[in-house]
Amino acid sequence: MAVSDQTKTRNRRYGFRRASQLVARPVREVGESRGFAVSRLLTHWAEITGEDIASHTRPVEVSYGRGGLGATLTILTTGAHAPMVEMQKEKLRERVNACYGYSAISRIRITQTAATGFAEGQAVFAPAPAAPEPKGPSPEARAAAAKTAAPVSDPSLRSALERLGANVISRKS
Image (cartoon, rainbow, N blue to C red; front, side, top):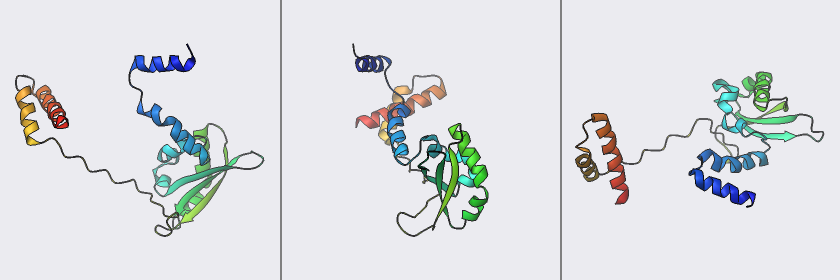
């Protein structure tokens, strides 16, 4: 049995895979194409740098020199925040290197952009607004689920079963 056959058998045997396992490789490949050897730098930027810096900066690229001794991290920020980020570059470099586990970043380059402007230069530093929640099940589905769950004596269990039943009934129609 080949290695890939064993892997397929093991995946079927254990059931579902984590969503993080499904997207880990594509995210890593995209990150590496932009120069990020550790995608954690992109995904956990706020935790690495702190909320005060992360609120107005974004990592753009990690580029390696010809000698291969240390890399340059390019950070995107708005023009008004650039002097403040410039003063905190050394602290920022230490935090980023702690993420890598060794002194991978030797220089930090700050790129300024306008809050509005050219399409590629626009920087949105606020998190995306939350998506509106989908509408719940119809009143008919809720009534049918309540009727089905009525014999259950525990009120919290009955409530949970009513919500589950209403969602299942609304998906069938």
